[in-house]
Length: 166
Image (cartoon, rainbow, N blue to C red; front, side):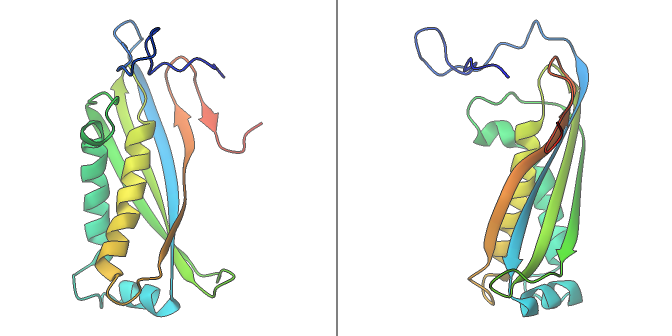
């Protein structure tokens, strides 16, 4: 792991990293996150009984849109020609200490390029969860978004990294 902050110039100014000399490789990143909610909220999502519409379909589309627009949100990110974005939701049926259930999201983003897609995957996961919150807040304002994190990345000079791997 490098201790060099690549997004700062020698004189300390913020900059977009020049990736023109980097090798073009297949790159993949997977990010995840969780939204905790009251059991009745999850039940209504699954039953399709949220007044604003199909929550997971809208959250899926929002996540794809966020991945594609990451460079518009994060100032030093490169615009990347994404080759794939896949979003998956999983129910969390084990109550937490507050009795809340929830949804876990996994966002997988791919491109063939000179820089990675970690930020795109993190933006996709975050936006999916924010969309669930937005669509369900009328019935459950106490929802909590937690544990947004990079799970895995592949490609580029640094190769393969996976959370929890030795």
